[in-house]
Length: 290
Ligand code: G3H
Ligand code: 13P
Ligand code: ZN
Image 1: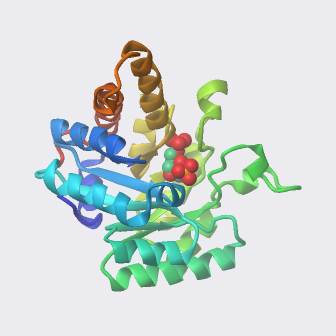
Image 2 (image 1 turned 30 degrees about the vertical axis):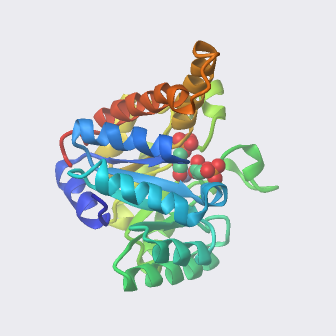
C-alpha cells in the first residue's frame, strides 16, 4: 500500500531500526524492491531521482510505483519519495503527481540560501501533509564536487549549523554528510570511514529529527548498525541496485543468447534486485516491521 512517511519513521524510532530508501528506475527495479518488501514484510521507501523522471516521465514512473505498491505490495507500506529534488518545481510537480514524501537538496548553496529554499519546499509539502527531507553539508560523489579552495571537512555537516538548519527550515528528516559519498567509486577504491563523533554531535543538536544516511552502498553491517544506534532512520541505496540489475542483465543476455523475449531475459535481473533488497532490509533491522 502507498503511505506517507511519518508513521513509518516514528515506528522505526521506537524500534531502533532504519527504513531502506531504494532507488528505482523502471518497472523491473520497482518489482524487485516490492517483492523483497512483501517477502520480508518490511516497510520500504521507493525513491526516484530527477534524472529518472527525465528518463521515464513523471506520470509513468509515478504510476508504476503507485500501482505496484497498491497491487503487488498490498499489505506492506511503501513510500514514493523524490530523491535529491534540486528544484522547488520538482518538489511541487512530484507532490501533485502523487509522491508521498520529498527531498529538497540545495546543499550546494550557502547556508542562508539553503535554508530559504528548503523552507519554501518544506512549507509547500507540509500544506499537503507530506514530510520533507533537507540536506546540510554535501554528500559528494567525487573530488570534483569539492569546490576550489574548499577542504573535505568543510563539505561535511556542521553540527551547530544542523541545529539552526532544522529550526530555520522545519524539515522532518535531515540528510547528513559525515564522510559518506555517493556513487560507484567507493565500491572500487574502498568505502570511506564514517565520522561517528560528528553524527553524535549532529543528533544532539537536532533533537528528535531523524537522520538520513545517503551513499550507503557498500557500507558494511557493523558500520550501518552503529549509524542506526546514533539516530539514522533512513538509509539510501542506489549504486548497489544498479550493479545488481546490470550485472544480472549482462549474464542473462549471455545465458539466453538466442532468446528474443525480453520478459525471459528480465526475470533474473529482477530476482537479483530482490535478493539485494532482502539483504539490506535484514541489515537495517526492518524485517517484519511492515
Ligand atoms: O544520490 C543520487 C542518486 O544516486 C540518484 O542518481 O540522478 O543518477 O539517478 P541519478
Ligand atoms: P549510493 O548510490 O552511493 O548507494 O547512494 C544512494 C543515495 O544516496 C541516493 O540518494
Ligand atoms: Zn543521495
